Image (cartoon, rainbow, N blue to C red; front, side, top):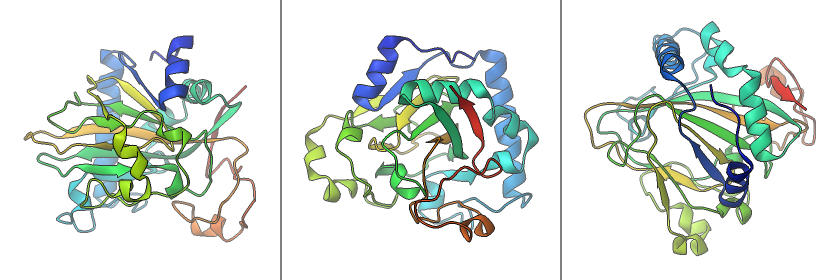
Length: 264
């Protein structure tokens, strides 16, 4: 796994709010990530482990944007080993410029054959902490192309974004009702050969096109929280028993919920 980044890549990330790292996984690692992720998703959809997925109504619009299975590391040993790799934490921390990284949540995102587009949105406003340094990794398990729904970004939007976003709904452009000034920013498509990692800031506007092919476009992702982040009052994926102990401003430092995977 190629997790070392150059000064130029760090600078690009901080200026644009995203960076593409081709060759992140070698062929053997890619095969293992594919097998592990597919097995974890299959188990989740079969009802094993927690029910954190969006397939309650598989014909609903959002269910056809992608099959989304969250916190697979909680229910699958192989996924836990992948997600707790300290090298991933160091990579995220290096790009974000923070001293420590905790996992917020992992999630598999499989865009189905002929799947719906992913509307423009921001990530961090959904989560239970607010940070300008939140970061996610998105690993292509299949070739992600302009035909099957590769990621698109609006460069630099992490610098002016607030904690407002929209849901991933039917209207691709809903986000621009909140940020009309972003309409003038040219979008950047990021085709990604299988084994590529794409990392983006939690406040960078992004989306994806429809899958116009008859094959899935699979990706495994993980959202990261800078160590020292505090609870903002949003429930998101926090367990109910933990949520009941929190008040706004409390440190989110429970290693059983948000593992600290790297610290300087």
